[in-house]
Length: 127
Image: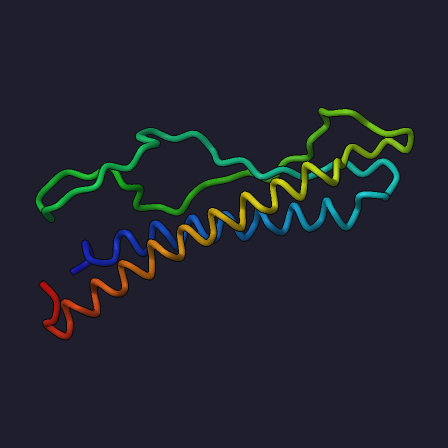
């Protein structure tokens, strides 16, 4: 039965990553006028088999990660720095915020589809 929830764990882990990324962006926006503040960025760590393979049978070999997404929070020391030493670009942060929101919406729709499928299996309905 574990195979039925593997995708959900994968999506949940990605949502957790997006939540951390969202908080970093919020911190950057809140400190946009703080002297010498360096923006935060959140990066996924590289790992083997980055592209998950979808399987159609529990006996198929899958490379969908079993562990949560690993990420690191870094201070971004690159980019243009203003006269006050701050490197936050509000327009860039707003674009990044929108990207995170779109990814979050997409993943929640995938999860909604997975839950709908599980509901049909449990109720015994559907094609």
